[in-house]
Image (tube, rainbow, N blue to C red; front, side, top):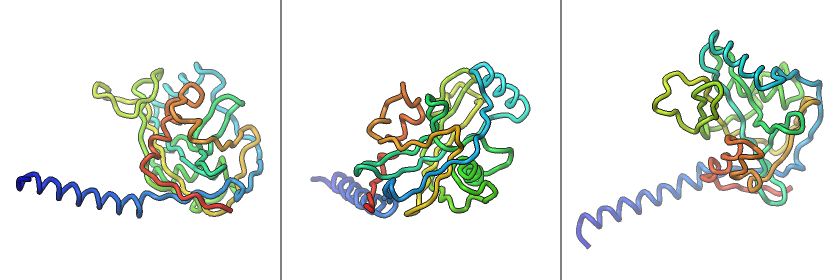
Length: 222
């Protein structure tokens, strides 16, 4: 073996060991059983959009007033039957959404996501949301135009995207209370059911299992 080949092999082995270290130390996520959590209900929250036309009209008016729509959504995992399950909100028994929503002007990603989690999943809506542990950003999705689908990249020919949505991993403690508005359902859906199931869950949610593929899950049994 020549010197160049030996050097490449050495660099590969060094990089491989570094990746093992990072994987073991930084990419392990503790997941607690669904039975560790309490689920209750609170007052309903109003829905802004009754039809697709209403939503598009609101997006256009908001864009004219504030510019790009910035959204944040939470990826929250629990354990059930020794398999990771993703917590999803279901609207009107049909539409699935990750917990989250639109940022206010000047609001940071983490503060905005905590505010949305408090509003949709917490007991006290006056809380500042610091009990929600917002972790790393898993991915970003872009909407080039009002009527187009979201893309996991910004197309090179798009200069003025209309929406940017960021997904954040939110780690749960060993126990907590989830208090959900009465007109929403909080469901735990297995990752194996979500994977590439765009027809049911949409392009963003169905891509979450791939975003989580770099993590190893530590299933903590009750």
